[in-house]
Image 1 (cartoon, rainbow, N blue to C red):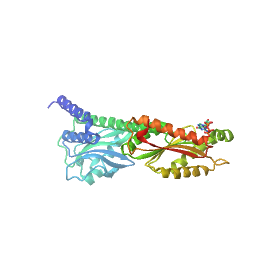
Image 2: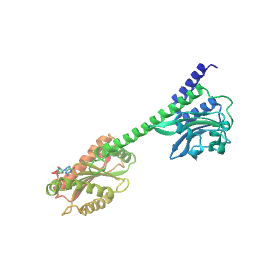
Image 3: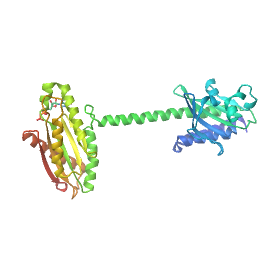
Image 4: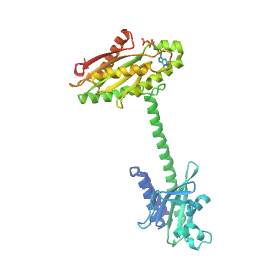
Length: 354
Ligand SMILES: Nc1nc2c(ncn2[C@@H]2O[C@H](COP(=O)(O)OP(=O)(O)OP(=O)(O)O)[C@@H](O)[C@H]2O)c(=O)[nH]1
């Protein structure tokens, strides 16, 4: 086979492997290592990661009787890769035993590796590890230019893929952080209104389908404007943070609390019996009164709409949430009108929602 058609073959094979994203990085790597072993007529193919003079096998392909697997670690000095990394370019050795310099190398003394071809892999400007192929048998011919070219092409793909995967991870993390930011109230760090409604849509649907019950609670800090006026806006902020913390700590795992806006909070209490609501409200009022931020105790007023879906509601979930919110809001208004520091409750049956 001519050198030209050999290089064509290498490129075509590499293209097939690297284009097959569905295989996943690990399987693509294994295919590349297998391709290298066939190309170089060697036994052991390894992608290594090197850190602090420790050589870790990231991926390898070798005969069954060779006990190497991903995760195995060696002292870097025991491998030819220490030479590869130091020389900063590829290293190709056909018959190490005959070499004056490397014939005494620990990789030869320890493992009897007669032939080796390897190249450094770089990641973000630093040595990541090596791509290397070796065998305990002497190599019967000289490595050719096409061998070195193939090795370089394989290494280039691995380098690009490492960066691509790294950037993909960064992007996923960035998206997660953006999503978290978009659903968290920046002051109190509890879910914001957007997140509340997202949760409600899922939960109201679930409760309705399960013929269960729940309660929606609107909580408003009393005379909050006076707190701001008397202690300043910063203390007002601290009060909001303290109330949010109390609400979060007071609730059961499956309850949900969010900041509805301003000095208003909303609670979602699934599967709650009407009899339990008095206890919950009394406990919240007590815990909030015990916040020791201001000279006087803080008080809250609450409006509650508790509903049963024994006969489910058949309209849209958005409409159901609107009606539940409006009813809780009406009860909050009643509590404020009754002098504040109290709660008002309306019990309804879901299927009667107009
Ligand atoms: N410090 C602070 N104040 C806020 C924030 N959001 C809203 N407020 C203030 O909360 C106050 C709410 O006042 P009002 O709606 O009159 O209600 P209130 O004084 O609590 O009176 P009642 O609800 O009738 O008991 C306003 O002065 C807003 O400026 C915030 O994030 N931080």
